[in-house]
Length: 219
Image 1: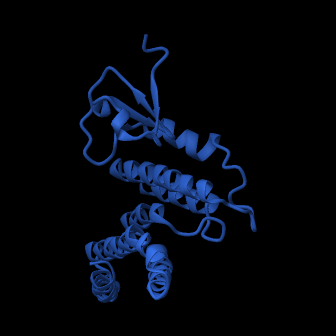
Image 2: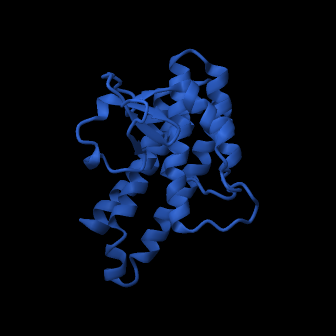
């Protein structure tokens, strides 16, 4: 009875998809199972842009995340990665349909509800940066690259300081250090792909520096 469809949350692990990925339609923060097979290599499931736009831009209430001074604990901040990614997927799908103005509006809406001041840049910010590059807003994209670059560099320098203390505590930061290095590499590749050569070179220098630090500290 497809009038009462089955939904998966976008936060569910792929291990639970039961090989139904090609039958998903993405609607907001949910994946609807359909009897139709879709082939889409860009995103998980076919993006229903009209339905997703209505939900993200008009219906969803984001709970005051943008309130200055609001406290966001670790779990809430982790969820914002999924929220930001949802906006980036919608923006990308709209771009694929040639609706660049709508795509930029989606990106702007996301940053309005989840500004840097209350939701610090995290792994969920890189698809949004790419989205701004893709719609031609290079000024915003480059500014975001610079801010995220500074945050990643600050984290990596902290891990290096931590390495001078208790080895047991420091050893647990291996994956976090590597994740930050990978994000720098992702920013570098993005800048290179969109012709931002100077930024790409700057990020390449930091990538090499922190890559050497990783080899020295963890291998």
